[in-house]
Amino acid sequence: MDPLISIRLDQPHRAYQAGEEIQCQYQVDRVELNQLQAVEVSLLWYTEGKGEEDLGVHYFERNIPTADDPDIRPLKQFQATLPGSPLSYEGIIIKIQWCARVRVFLQDGSIYTHDQAFLLGKTPVAQIVQP
Image (cartoon, rainbow, N blue to C red; front, top):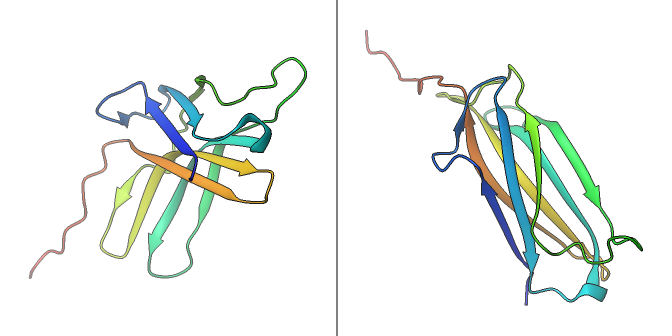
């Protein structure tokens, strides 16, 4: 059975402005403690569309079991101030998407990823203008 990864953002509408604080809660379930190697959380943007895809990481944190915190499955949270750019964008040729990402690494080498998309800024959706 695959791990269950939950992500919750503090804004139910999942829309933020540049310079705003974002808070994210995450939790990993359906995995035994001894199977879990690490959990990585990040805020990132990526492009989709024509040409090469690009990716930029704004925030990153890696959690591993330690003597002080042996169980990294329970609910945790992080927060970060969002940057001024790039803003979310849905164009004709390219799309810029922001997300909170949780990656779970198991002892057997398996990696599981879950993304929660959000918008940064209020850039209008591009439209083709007819002459």
